[in-house]
Length: 215
Image 1: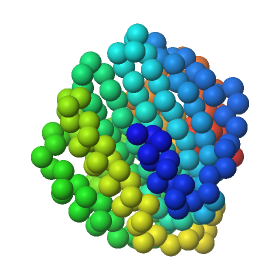
Image 2: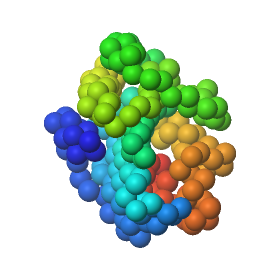
Image 3: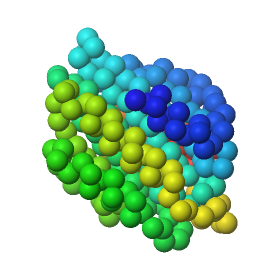
Image 4: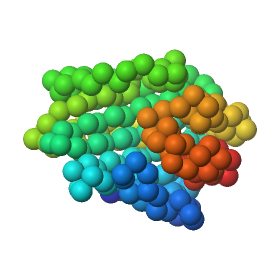
């Protein structure tokens, strides 16, 4: 699925690999993570994490986009396959300088209301998470439908009528608010990395590689 999402990205933006260095392969909490990152010309930082663990019983894919050149919200795709279950989490964070019409994302979501909702719980970042985000959980048999939802939603995201960023420093600052919040107040994967690698190394991974807010 990650390959399909990257394929859609490449249709619109030119991707240049960014060296993840010591973070290319990570091991934490019984999982092995493969990390890669790209600079998308005219868009921003794109990062991918693919993890496997627990004797192959769990697989997790993540793709994140931190826009710097176009005024889109920060995008995070997570897919977790475990014990016959399929979980799809797409979160969009308000790092917008100007208002943006995102109604096309709601239109996509409306087509898939028959898929079971997942309770995302309560988190510190709820105030900046857009309602056009997705949280679904189902069985492996629903994978095709989950794929269709993720792809259509991603296409709509890439085609949002966003303007080019005029104030790069302001855009970077808004993204940094979210990233620094993760590091200071935590998040599901953030807490795993902080426990395994400590705060300093986790901050370097997040700021320099995954989100590029300190690149």
